Image (tube, rainbow, N blue to C red):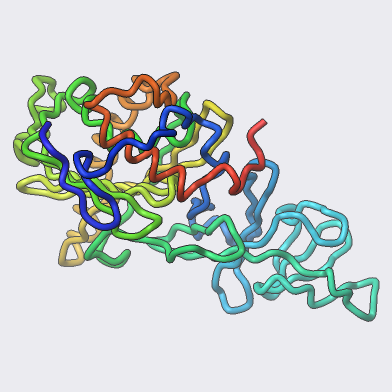
Amino acid sequence: MGKVEVKGDMMSPKQEPLDATEHHLDRSLFSQWPPGWYYLCHGRDLHPGPLGADFGHSMVVGFRNGDGNVSVLDGRCSHMGAYLRRGSVVNGKLLCPLHGWEYGGDGRCTHIPAAMSIPPFACQTVYPSAEMGGHVVFFRAPTASYAMPFFEGKSPDDLLAAKPFDIVGQTPWYMIGANAFDAQHFRNAHDRTLVGDPIVDCPSQFARRIVATYQVSGDSMHDSLTRRFGGPEVRMAVTVWSGSLILVTARFRRTTSYGMVFVQPVAPNRTFMRTIVWVQRGTGAMTRAMIDPLNAWIRRIFIRRFMNQDATRAHGAAYRPATMIDADSEMRQYFQWLAKVAPASGMNDGLD
């Protein structure tokens, strides 16, 4: 493969000696929940609302506040822990189903039917949230370490999102992002031949990116169609944000595909992945109404097939630093980086 060029705050394998403690690294180094952005729902699911979701031992609830914007709060009422997702939204306020306590979008209780005053504890944790392309996401901490990222040089208005699809991988969450840095598997699993040297950098302390060019060298019908409509080579950029979000841009000669993967742990060796495929919007009313949705639907089929292959082949895989070889250098450095941005001292609730 040759030497890997590394930009940002990381060094190449020849410049960076192996950490003497590396062989003591194991799965216990990683947080059970990577800190970062998670998928909640499509925006239309909040009409009339609310909508809740479980994340380990914790839960969140989303609703539209009085301004029409999305608010995401801790999902259990500060009073007695009732599930707020079983409540209702009235005039932009979230009402607890048990005693009718009302919460605004800022998490503060504004009214208690059975009391004249509101105690100081009557408030909910508020999680940073964002809405893009019709989809609602939130950061699983009271303060976001970084803004919700998007594809470089694009805004959600530039692209059309296809319907999300879900895949469950029988492997720990930290293996999902590592897949992009596993150069061996592209040839073995996808009939992709590396062209030149990949470039690895860190555009943010919370993000690690690999950019590489691959030749579509397989003989399957899928690869034949890819070469015909896309081109014989693909320039792929994969950016992993703190392990919970992966952005993929695949540039062929004649087209570009965009993929956004939200990574959610389910169990120590089981991971849920929700993927949204995006395509460039065309010009003209007919193109936007008919061609763009068809384009997004076709890309979704191809990318889902691609990811299903990975999920099946990676069944049972886990991080074993003592058995990694020279060909695993990019992946090994990815794990070292991930142990720093998603350490075990972080959000460790919920994976029993």
